Image (cartoon, rainbow, N blue to C red; front, side):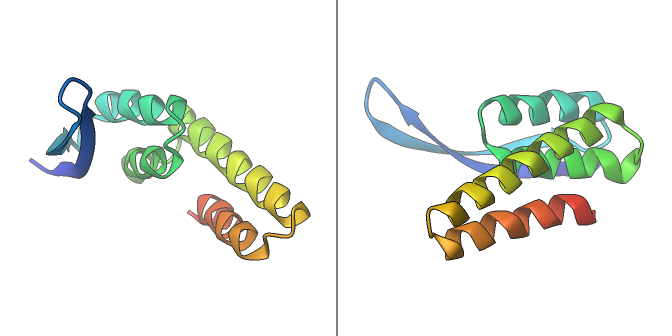
Length: 106
């Protein structure tokens, strides 16, 4: 069975210590992947959500929820790129626009 592993760091609020852990997800469980992608999307962790959506779409290219999630992320990256460009941060804008292009190209 294949797994998708993430390395995460969380903070223990009682002791203020960083806790590092590996999180493994079953790749063949698209519903589990989709739920986790949405959790990352709602937490505004767009890069992590994008990884999950890409895994879902690899197995099911017409998964409506994953396509919609990816489109949401692409719009966010485009908006951030445009906002940074208007503020004169061209390097930051380029990074976000590259991420937006990545969403469209896959």
